Amino acid sequence: MSSALSLAVLLWTAAPAAGDWCYESNNTTCADPSQWHVAYPKCAGNHQSPVDVVTKETHYKSSLKPFTFEGYDRALNVTVKNLGHAARFDLPESGKVAVQGGDMTGSYKAVQFHLHWGADAGPGAEHTFDGERYPMELHIVHVKEKYRTLKDAMHDSAGVVVLAFFFEKSSNDNSHYDVLIGALGRVRNTNSNTTVSSLRLDSLLPQPEALARYYYYTGSLTTPECDEVVTWALFQEPILISATQLTTISQKLLTETGAPMKNIFRPMQPLNDRTVFRSRAAALLHRTPALWLGLLCVGGRAWLPE
Image (cartoon, rainbow, N blue to C red; front, top):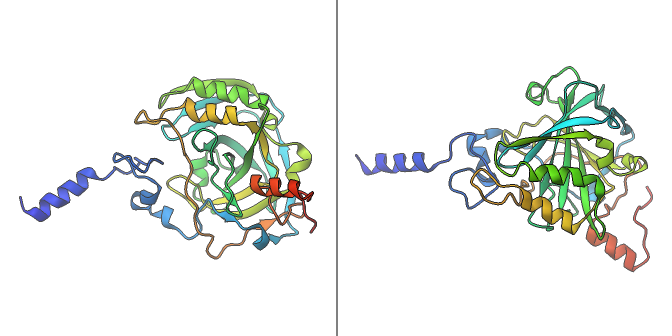
């Protein structure tokens, strides 16, 4: 065998197969985010997510209406599965759980939600605000009502809406998340699953009056195949959760290789020619942990006027 052929065989056998992606940069059996584009060319697109929201560069958009939530107060039986790179919470198909708002036309139904976190209680959100990263981020994934699944919606450039919520460390536990933490403990290994009974989505979110404050932009899924079909709404009011709970969440699951499931977030992507818009109630400065501490020190206000 020639040396050139031998090298080609070596490279082919060492390269991760399509579909074998992960967040672990030191894992030679799968492609980390810097290599996703090799097997998934869409991951090298110009309108990728997540992005850093530079709040002073956001633009107020008058058409951004408050979101209305239908069925978020229903008691749902949710299926939880360890995918090997994250845990997915699948919502039942029966009964309508949906949102309207932003400048979307029509209603979008919720199909699943998931979390992105770091190591222990360290930074782990995907989107950042003025360079600051929260410890965890919740994504509630919705598709146009005419589609049955997320896969069906991939062919529509406006087929998917993701509502993103951010977590801020508190001295107190958030009791609403105890049921999710318990469920994660029951799906420690890849492909294991369990059920959470009677879960209300609205119990996981900030108070309703805070949900009018959000940022809005077009982007992509943050996991392969990175389809650029997502409208993002990033809600400004953080969800409070204790450092103990954050640490527990990051220690519950194992990846497909048996490693602890930590730092499961995609690195920042360039905004390129896009604009991040804000609703009328959203502040020019986002209340990041560091900023909020500084405002407290000088007696400042959390929300700045338009």
